Image 1 (cartoon, rainbow over the protein chains, first blue to last red):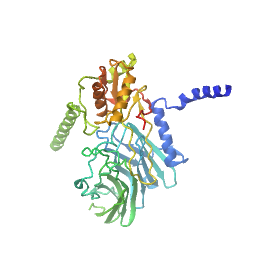
Image 2: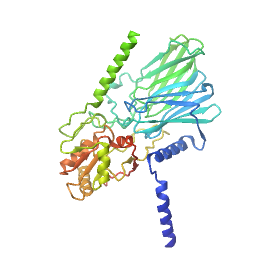
Image 3: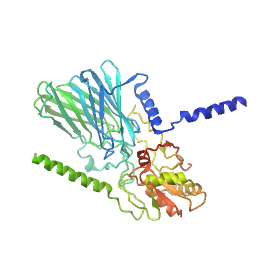
Image 4: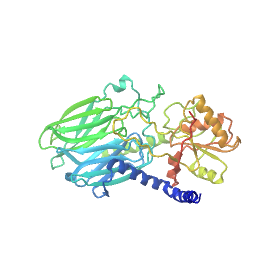
Length: 265
Length: 185
């Protein structure tokens, strides 16, 4: 009995401290959980001098929040991760760069479900991880209506466009923006006509190659906004073909290719 | 230069239009709102009172009320990519709230309606003049519907806090962990 009471007293003393008392504590615990589930025991170093994350402090449209990730030493970067801490599916993007990719700047548009930290993590070629974070005020981005499964909405699913900058950066890199028509239904959106939840159908991978060399391979999920727009760098020494293949959760494969070169198209 | 000036004027005009749109409240629907649950909400609630954050804090400090959060719980999508991580964060709301996800829907099935009616009666301790405060998220219609529903049940001191948990956090206040209350199966 004494032992039981002692345990009870101990529990009472420990429980409030273990419970997330305030929002910042809860956010720190959340990140701790996420880093363990995505990166295991690998150390993640503070990396605000290596990687920067740009996003609006307060997003006008929570279903379409623009995010920019810049890295200071692109030649040492293997991949970047974008995690929206308090989204139900936090990993918005894992972008692994190939020999034809220039990681210096990457832009994406994501959904934000509630006020949250967003983390950008850089993985170097030597396997180190560096992280930076930013707090974004937006809410409701995951349940915001995104249309229905009617044939018109899906008629041009998978259609792609590429916009390339006219000028190369001077060191053989061109910035390009890829637009992919895809509703990226996340399964949390209600069809306002039928009152049913629109079944999930979202892009899982997007791979881009330039003259058969990998530019990037993006793994993504339901935190990516409708009609994904991805701005990235391509190392181009000569004119060539940028080929893109994208696969969605229903198994559909979409492919396009574009002419690209140092002087634009 | 002239062009740039014109562009900046145009963008100011666009911004003003946006702001006007952002502050123009939606009219009150006659019935429960059945459109998109996230979006522009009305400035009023017939039969109830609208609370700003300061008034909300004062009312809570005065005590003797029940706080009802009707934020939806994240719905797990029916199809998920193998290996993808689904891990909604624990829900947090204003300390001391009763969290009843789903109570702000346009239509409640009879079982849910009865659960909600009885839960509110219990929260009010049978006193129809006891203040009930409804909220969810910023620009979320669920709390408007739920408050309207409470008025329909006969409660006479119904408050609606449209800024929700986001407004509460914006004022520098903190949230607390919450557990949902739902009808038993």
